[in-house]
Length: 166
Length: 202
Image 1: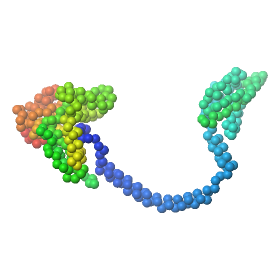
Image 2: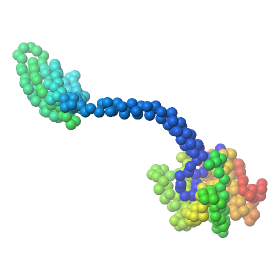
Image 3: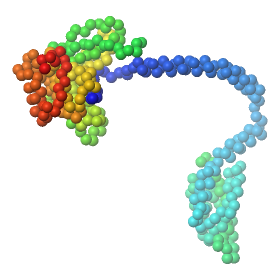
């Protein structure tokens, strides 16, 4: 059995096959049936929606609006990206470990407390953290060198400000 | 609209040109233009390697056309059947006026042109489902005899001869010559002959 030759010199045009017509017709019938099945409940739902919208047409007051704005702003902070950045900098094998992380979402601030092997490492952290995309600013707030035999004798506090447009 | 396959009127294009074209019985009536093999040109295109697109294929087909027939390809409409399963592609050319101007005239007369094909292509497509992969498919018509050789499903050669009524030799001899030309043993192919003069090939 051989295949037909695809040689035809007729001008190219979009052909409509009977099967396509049949499928289109069945689709149209289905659409009409689905439309009739959906219309009555839609009418009822629409009326309820109208009543509901009239009942709740009262605008939120300033406090509520402000609270919503704050919540949205906090949710929009790059939390996951900051978490990834901290994981990279202070993850396994790093020269420092984090002991505590506090957040002030309203100010977009993350406060890190940790321990490091030496002071030079700690002083390099702000620049390294600033290089991370979700972090707008990193400041070494304080460091303390303990003279005991602690494996990581330098304690430090760094404040990060998250980038709000990230 | 009927779901049955709609029949089309056939407009025969002979060596002396198209038969007179009547106005369509109703607007959009289907018309198939059937061009005699005596004005068509056939050849086999070896599948090239590294073909970038259909434009390159058209250029290649036009170049081969000029090399074989020596005519200007701009005056001809050329079509290739670039089957992905085949290493040799049947290629056909008909005078450009039958592929462009004639359909335009027909559409101006209210016809809807469905096909423009040469006789051999049309007959082959009609019969191909019943053909063996080793076949000499022949169309014995009043204007010419066309013999195409297919081995293992691949086109090996195609030639257009004078009609059997005007041929100095019989069909068997024509087939033997074509097979020899294509370096094929005649016995390897099963001849299938269609057309109005098919009985003369028996």
